Image (cartoon, rainbow, N blue to C red):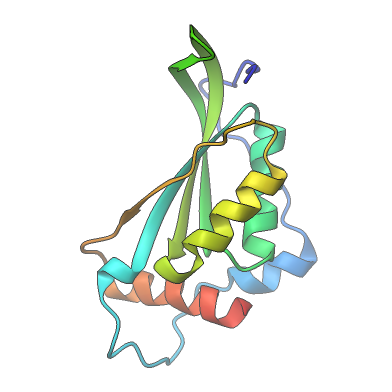
Amino acid sequence: MAGHPAPYGHLEYFEVPLSLAHRLDRSPKSIDMSNSSPADVHVAFCTCPDSGTAESLAAALIEEGHAACINLIPGLVSLYRWQGRIERDSEVLLMIKTVRERLGTLTERVRQLHPYDVPEVIAHPVTDGHDAYLNWVRQCIDTAE
């Protein structure tokens, strides 16, 4: 799990492919969420060795409908035990907004695309939040199917 230096102190931007841009419409839509609870929305975390890997993985997960939104957080320093040694690497953290039903396929896709032997994918249910945003996350996943 060799890492690469992550940028510090500035924001990175990347262009969104046209095939992905139509899914980034954040305007509210009229959809029935009467049977939804905040806990069906999850935030998953995944570390990447560099910004290029993070951007391509994030774009694939959104394009394929596994996630509604992914934040790329550079400047992360990870300390971990790997093959009997303590390692230290600079990484980029992906904060992935998805729904419970997609966690399995999201994890499998990360495993397929990620350069690490054992990529980190951990998820937490959202217990509360802005209803319009949570509905938007659900809708993005539903419309991507």
